[in-house]
Image (cartoon, rainbow, N blue to C red; front, side, top):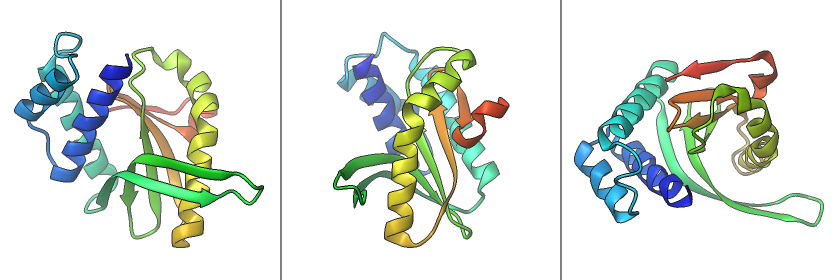
Length: 162
């Protein structure tokens, strides 16, 4: 599962940089990580196209920043160092999206948000400290399942299918 997650991250990152997805790129990346028989490249390409369309629909003409490194002092003596999967830069602020290759259904969303929510909050705090601009929304994208979950709204059951 780790290799699949890494391969999907690379597919998403390349697509974010290019602004589109190519079946040939997806096939090549899946093969590089030896997961080409684990998932269908056409399905992965289709999911990424749907995800890019969802981003464009929600935040048209916004800039996408992929695999953004982050380092920040947390103010309590600890230090945050990580890499944010996707930042959408809007005129009003930032949208933070984390990719998780979890194939489970939406019933696990609450548990996954509890698990990864603190990480996204720490990233959001670091973004604000660095840029002076707020993170307006935090999302988790599940490329295998083909859905996104808004972290702030999971308790209200908000899940979008991409």
